[in-house]
Every structure is written in structure tokens, then in C-alpha cells.
Image 1 (cartoon, rainbow, N blue to C red):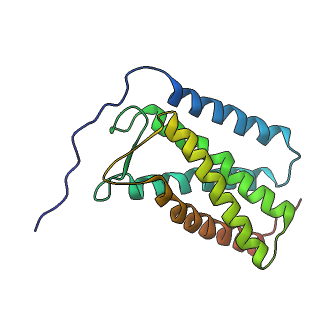
Image 2 (cartoon, helix red, strand yellow):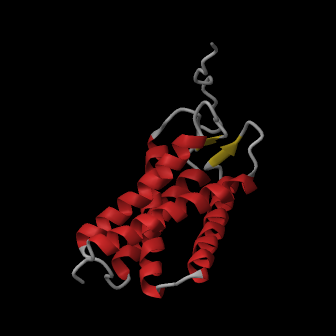
Length: 173
């Protein structure tokens, strides 16, 4: 029986440059907007939704970016580094705003599907920018377009979780 092993370390970059700046600027803008926009949820829900955003990004990354799939590396190296961790923190506001806007718009029926598709396209745009700035390095034949079904699936699951949370324990606004 053949088992997979971790690939040797690949270094893409040794400088502080566009990929680190992208992560830091995304964190700054995302969390600034979080404090600027009108409060929509109690603090405990806000923290929960930030963690859901961070964890969904982390689970997705660790599902397809490590062996046995190993479709891409994040940032400067195939090793886990501090900016890999910061990239997960960067995902928090995206998850929060996904819930925030859904709660604000309250789409129903087919509009919910359009909402998920539009956020999946938004995620693709953000990934394209991140890829071009060196945050992601595709390998093993992975192509940019392959990310869409992953985004669609993860956002569908997280939206179902949000709806369940709001039905079982609606916040006192």
C-alpha cells in the first residue's frame, strides 16, 4: 500500500512584497468596514460569523492545498508560515459580510441561489487578484476555474448554517 508523503519545500519568494501587502490591506479594509458599517448582529454573533469565515477558508485551503491533492501553495513557500495564518484571519470579514448582506437583503427562493452564485463570482475575483499578487501558486494541473465549485459548495453550506443559527437562536438585536 502506497501512502502519500509531504512534498519537499518549494520557495516562491523571499521578499516582503505584493502577496503580504494584499493580505495586510485586505485585513485592514475588512475589519475597518466591520467597525464602520451599522451593527447588524450582537457581538457574540459577529465573532461567531468571523470565525465561520476564517474556518471555512482554512478548511477549504487545507482540503485541497495539502496532500493527497496538493493543488496549490499559499504565499512564499509550500511550508506553513505566519502570512498563511494571517490569510485565514483575512477570510473572517468576507464570511461576516456574506451573512451581513444576506440578512440585510433577505433573498428568497431563486434569489438565494443567485446570491450564492454572485458571492462565488466575487470570491473568484478576489482569488484572481490574490493569484496575480502571488498569494496562490497553482500546481498539479490546477486551474483557476476549478475554484468556483468549491466556493459554491462552501458558501451553500455556510449559508445553511447561518439560516439554522438564525432559526434556532435568533439574536436579540
